[in-house]
Length: 177
Image 1 (cartoon, rainbow, N blue to C red):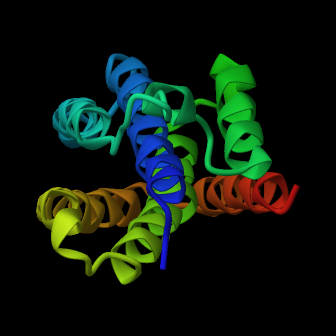
Image 2 (spheres, rainbow, N blue to C red; image 1 turned 180 degrees about the vertical axis):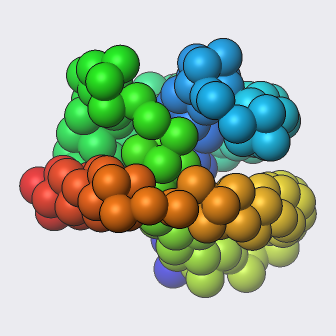
């Protein structure tokens, strides 16, 4: 059985991740070379912004809890991975790199993070959070499918494949910290 504070930590983590993805994808959408990638990232960014707000509004709270203080990185690895993305230079900012970071690095982990939350839901008081999780999951999975398709079209040469592999390697290392 989970406590209200444990639930607040999980929901707060999802709000934080969604807000970070909103910012990253919005920033990257402005400089992608593929028009399909621009449109996809801009739409996906808006989805994450909405998800961040849904999670923030769903934070379980009590007068003693102050749930908003639980909005933060799920782990140090998540924070480190976003720090790596923020520190990325424009030279490494190719479509292949960015799409790999999102669809091979962050999104599979976000799906796992949401699955961890939903596996613990079951109390009648969790119904609102379960509904939000179902809505967000549908969006994330649909956006993930579209993003993977766009990523596949960017991997047309050996250099793009090498850049994509490099991006996921650095994120994998960050998430392990």
